[in-house]
Amino acid sequence: MLRSQEIREAVVALRAGDVIGFPTETVYGLGADAENEDGLRRIFEIKGRPAWHPLIVHLPDASELDAWARDASPIARALANAFWPGPLTLVVRRGARIPLAATGGLETVGLRVPSHPIALALLRELDGAIAAPSANRFGGLSPTTADAVRAELGAAVRIVLDGGPCAVGVESTIVDVTDAPAILRPGGVPLAAIEAVVGGAVPLGVGGPVRSPGQLESHYAPRAHVVVSATDRVAEGIDAARARGLRVGVLTVAGIDVPEGVTVERLPDDDAGRARGLYAALRRLDDVSDVVVAALPGGGALDWAVDDRLARAAAPRTPDGDPRSDARVRGS
Ligand code: TXA
Ligand code: MG
Image (cartoon, rainbow, N blue to C red):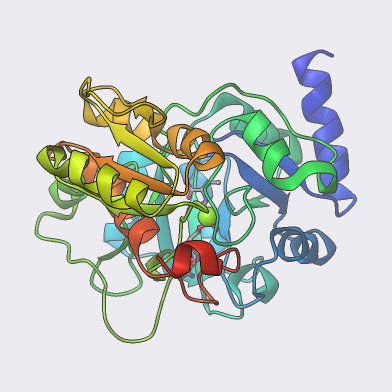
């Protein structure tokens, strides 16, 4: 089918209150027309996500900020102009067009303009906004390929647009700009780039009530138990897991000697490459391992997002944060 025809079909589905899988430059999204309450309800149903979790609303162009936000600050505008289209989500005051069902009842909304050509074509054809979380079940790994979306959501989603593997590979950076800017989630735009536009340090918004489920400790978790390790302690991690009869996978950038039966996934030796390859590598390891020992170098601009996701994957599972946690990995 022609791409333009595929896009038109997807827009017909969105208008009818259906949901679709679609590519963005960060990860694949599970999208609904942001102004269609039926579509929004479907997202929460399919993801198994609590209705109080706010969704990110995707716009076709930075010039639409004021159509969907109320009283955007000069800093919000500066960040939108600098990074849209791109992997940045701005939390702003909710404009009247955004239903409360999209924001989990909050008076704020996360907005972003994605840069993937298919996402932009969809948004232009819809002539509206698309609310979309990552296209995984709640608490799981974000999909970075169309196949991963189908594996996560199966028959529940009829249309999945295939835009190839995501170029960024980790989710958008979320900056709350309703007040003094604060980072709610490290992501595809590096901290230094944000601070350069803001003109000063931007703190990580921690403490107080959870403002973003991205802040839940055990979010972004594979089924396997993840252990973050120094490179020179990988062997120790492998031995400890194997002593308990567990299958081990290793996530690393270096060539590494491992005992027979241990699966190794190598990521590229640059931070953008690590971010791009992270979720697909974790998915592959998840299929064959009970424990994943992750030893990555860090230090690059996008490693803040990679390290954040690995730390969350390694965090203790809570029933709220990860419904898929089970005794097998939790007990270990
Ligand atoms: O890269 C991305 O951001 C991807 C692609 C599909 O755009 N989307 C994504 O959505 O990661 P999701 O739903 O998996 O994560 C969105 C995060 C959640 O942690 C949510 O709580 C937070 O954004 N968020 C959305 N609106 C918010 C708001 N008003 N206040 C605080 N956090 C908000
Ligand atoms: Mg997500």
